[in-house]
Image (cartoon, rainbow, N blue to C red; front, top):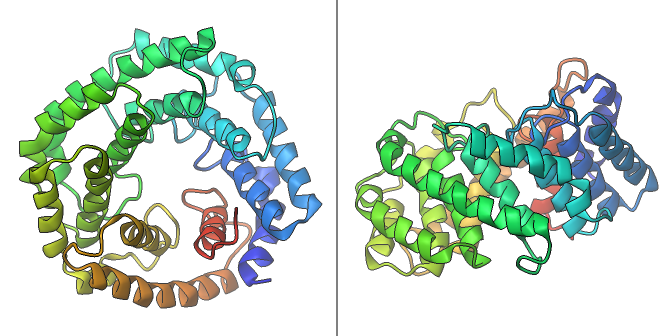
Length: 348
């Protein structure tokens, strides 16, 4: 086994006692997902036991003090629980398990004025939660599903208004962030469209945003590729000639030689660092047609950065300080380890 599947789990285990966050990005829900994947790959029962203990801890601490958001709160926790059950890591009826989460998300969405479509603390996080609750389930089979379906429509309508008013702000990209709100929101809408959830409305939204989207070329090179990949997902389901033209423009205008220079060498995590950039390149290789501009450049850049990734990962592991190292999925070593397993095709 590699150092990723030996040293990192040991360090994460030793640090579990200090984790008080129950959330998906930085806390026990994300760590639970990590250990279940690790157990499936290594076939070691001890990792299943750790994951089971972590999810028990999450449920015991899901009280009124836990926020709603996707990063640290109930929306992300609920998404994680749906992920575990839908991927056969755990068993249970999520309509029962997530009843309190559904209620609090409902009240949050209905009773508050919303000004952000961030995935971390805004409406896109709630959108992803609601999509996960409706995924692979008979439409309106239960009262919970009926309510969540109506709530998803309500959420998409609010996002439409926010995006229309705030699209101009996406030009202010100064660094790479895997949680960049605009492409994540597009991925969320694509997922809803794919499941035939409010599809006609989503089609109209994309067409209405068209002029603004077509006029926008991000400053950061990796963000150009990120946006092109997100738009490619939309294009697959909503064919639009202008959208395709802009994707080609983004790819043609990406200077792949500059992508390595845009990385902060002090950050080695999924959200802001090299692992996240490699993830975007892999998604681009998977979803962008080979006939589109610079496809071979995407492949060669990915190969070069994978070599750097392997070297940086070994260096990072050798220098880890267990007392100060972040261990969460989004900005910690468990996320890097999980991505390494997935990238190697080790998980099922």
